[in-house]
Image (cartoon, rainbow, N blue to C red; front, side, top):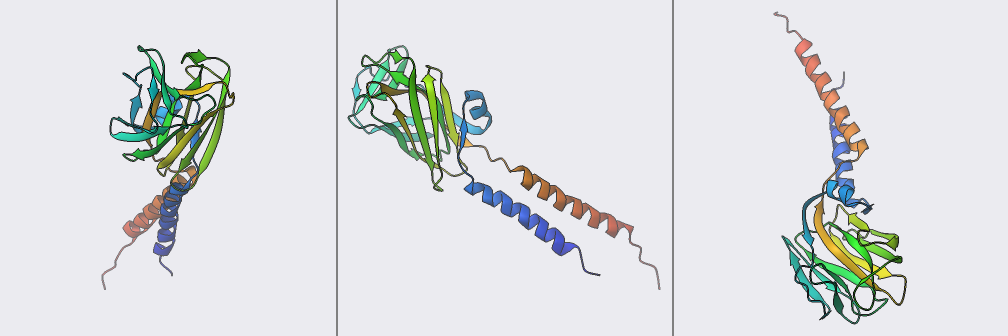
Length: 219
């Protein structure tokens, strides 16, 4: 009778293959800071403390915790908000705010995205579109309608992030971000992977029981 080992090997190999294929999964979007935090590790937040309320040359290199990134926008950046609570915004209305050149293995990004006016104050009722791209070629676009100062949106990938572009619908408004979070996506095997791993372990347990049940009779 054939040995059950090949079946076990195939089952476990398939499970490991499923784990490997998860590295090619598409980007995932999160609409709350709590769900984003639950799906990420080693996060660091750029609250833009001490950011000047003034023009900022683009690109701007920034470091937060173990991570680094570059913020850029056509026509430059602008420190908006107030000295007590600064935000990062664009210098030109209608311009796209882009984050990229991530360092430190960033695979997740999130923050509060909204609009500001020409004076750098919060502008209610704005719609923003965010597009995240990762190292495996996946791209995901999400829209925030009627953004408030706490409108959170985040993205996570099992690859590393390449860029996040933030555009604003109104040509007379300025895209802004506060509390930008950089992190690493927590690896989560898919349910099918768990099922195959459990099947492999069950087969292994069956083999162990059969071996313990065998008796060798003396000649």
